[in-house]
Image 1 (cartoon, rainbow, N blue to C red):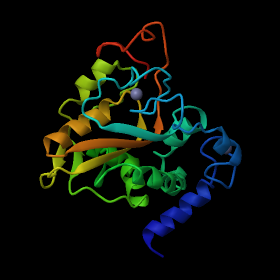
Image 2: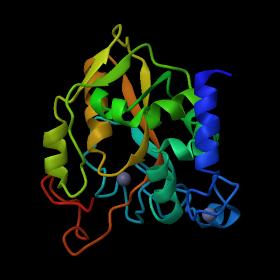
Image 3: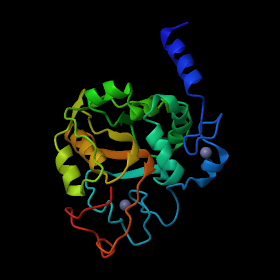
Image 4: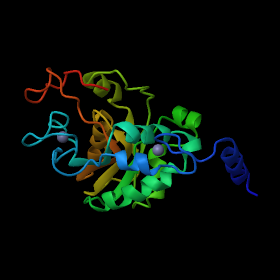
Length: 244
Ligand SMILES: [Zn+2]
Ligand SMILES: [Zn+2]
């Protein structure tokens, strides 16, 4: 038996298959958790980024995303969907990846994208985790690859608790593109979750600089902005703090 297969078998013995949402046995996602997922499509959502939004035009979460043609996601980032994305980072929940990839594939096919890239992890973080969950989803969904790859040259650490302006500042210059000029291609970026959008915007910026005609983003979940008194009146200025 291949060493990787032996390791997988060992992991299965130690960590039996469990629902990523609630821990029920023998399924990566039980019927109850499945039913609780909120699809990030349909009315009451921003046409540009799929965040919850019932107002006109683009929502406060994305109105200044000049780098992106649009962003889509499968589910609202809450409840069981939030747990799915979190657990996708752990080897023991790897049964989730093919399930989610299967759902991402038709969503990706709906976008006018010529080739896809995954949001990269910094090499030190990837070594620590053993794999990049976005890359794994990209491979399992069998999306057409872009002729370039993205690389993270700076370890930006956790973005949790940072304001939108702090996130953008920490990500500036964090990514590079390797490969031939994109010659007017439309490129898709795949990630596990879209929160403030700072990461996909910075990835889009370097892809446009590398010759892409336009850039789309797709993720498993989309975190909507919780409306507070600070941001209920019109779009916030770029420096306005947002919830993580
Ligand atoms: Zn469950
Ligand atoms: Zn929006």
